[in-house]
Length: 428
Ligand code: NAD
Image (tube, rainbow, N blue to C red; front, side, top):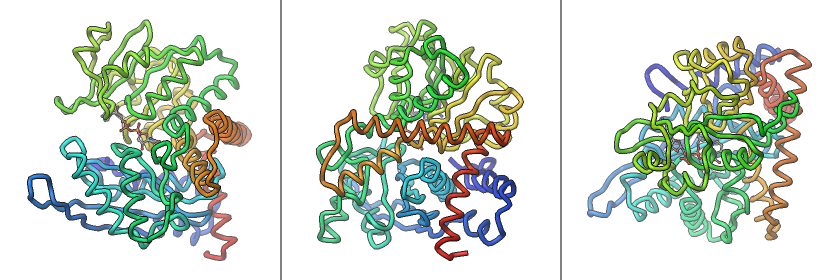
């Protein structure tokens, strides 16, 4: 989230500017791509369960639709800001480009806290969000999806409202829908599994046996849960995971050196990905301060919670044993931390590559909805694996050939693709 000292949009622009310079992009293309094409801010008035009225602030940002309809999630968060949404929309543009799917980048959000809202109130916010923006989104314009604290249920309410307004069935309007209601099998797994597909390839490339590695994760939500699931299926040992504690208003790290059993940990985790501390102790976990996920003696770190978690203050604490960082979250690492990570010689799998599995599967969901024919879970995961593996190797090859940092290599691929689309359309 944006704060006085951290602005994710400035960070996204800083990352873009550095690569635009490396690529020698002309000024007009830089000006065009370093800001969003369109942004919408609006009020969502809601009648609460107690009969009172409250007004929530909603956003939708379309950073680029040069390569296809804008695409990106909608986040419900009490600290949501327009600058966070703008940064996330920009990163979506690079993400869809790096995995080479025919979509652009967008993002949305509402400043609200689902912890304190009934399901009816959340439904009203979803429907209100769509009513404000229905003219400017849609399967051929801009396709939303779930993000932090939004789920398939929220997507279905939004779809229902959109179809009510337009009078047509438009399952391609939104992705991340529940299975059986237009959702794709394997969408829940897609982001976490996608991240581990890229990690598997990186380890293979470096000649390291995944079965002999250990990892620490930040966050225990959708991305992290499935990342841990596949990583441990491959034989890796996850020893630490951190999660937010709503009551204490801070995070905690849960460590068990003998390894985490994903299913067991899920049993003591609520729907927001928050782990019960008392039950964790009963299961033999040590409960450590939230920030301790980063200084564990492991081979792999997977930040999969929020932005700005690996920064100038925390990056120096990364243990010398760490060889890989796989960014499950969007924007977890600041440019200052990148410099520290480079010096530590850690192999970085950057966010918009590592977590592109979600949007890739969302694209598959759209394709299946358009065909009105749904694939098996195996088929979805095989296609996802192929896309992620291909994107990882293209990035890694460029990084090695040009001797650049992995994040820069991924940016070089994405920005070149989007700049080319913008040029071919004759926009700049
Ligand atoms: P989620 O809401 O399911 O889970 C978030 C997790 O982070 C929860 O376990 C929560 O307890 C934890 N958390 C929150 N604040 C924390 C803190 N300060 N310290 C430690 N843990 C904290 O969200 P998600 O869908 O798993 O998304 C996580 C990240 O991945 C976000 O950056 C999101 O934008 C990104 N992402 C998600 C997807 C997707 O498909 N879900 C796709 C691409 C990127």
